[in-house]
Each structure stands twice: as structure tokens, then as C-alpha cells.
Amino acid sequence: MASMFNQRTAGSGRNYMKRMSTHTAGALVVFALLQIFVVAKMGGSLVLHLGIIVAIGGFALAARSLEHRWTALERSGLSDDGLATRFRVDLLQLWAASLLAPMLWIPVAIVGKFVFG
Image (cartoon, rainbow, N blue to C red):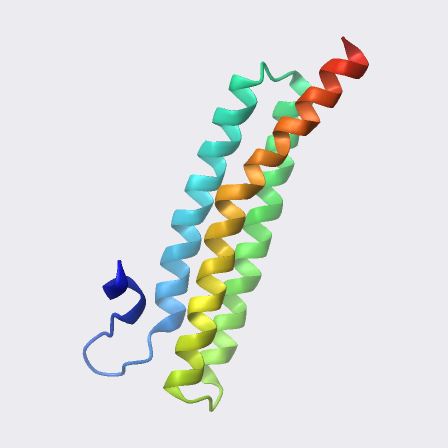
């Protein structure tokens, strides 16, 4: 796993944008699968399934803006160490959001069952 964060491609050494794009694609797949799994386990209603569509769309927009940010950061004059630190922080935030955000459906489903029976 350590090599995943410190991996360098031959040549430039600055290929963070491509690596971030790969991670955002993987995080989006994990996010979508966890959304579906959690809602299915909670006995999701049609409203929760429509909420999944909205949540996945919102996550996709956020991932796209993160990719644009890395396109701009890679073109900036930051040092490789500065980019590596930012990359690790953004990677941690991306994967934390993709793994933890689907769990927000649990209290929503509980409140929905309590209110609507």
C-alpha cells in the first residue's frame, strides 16, 4: 500500500493528475456500491433509491472538480514534495468520503421508518 502513495512513473515524476483520476474512478464505484448495499439492507423505499441517484451524481461532480483541481495543481510551480503532501491529503479525504458517506443513509432510513411507519 505504501508504494501506491509513493509510486512514480518513469520520466516526469509528476503524474498526480492521472493517479487522482484513477482513484476518483475507483472511489466512485465503491461509493455507488456501498450506497446500493446500505439502502438495500435497510429495506429502502423508492425515495431512498432516488436519493442514491442524487448522491452518486453529487459525488461524481465533486470528483470531477477534484480532478480539475489536480490539473491546475500539476501545472502550477509547486515542488514535488508539496504536490505529494497535497496528493496524500486529498486521497485520504476522497476515500474517507467514499467509505463513510453511504453510512449516512442508516439514520435517514431509521428516521423515515419511524416517521412514516
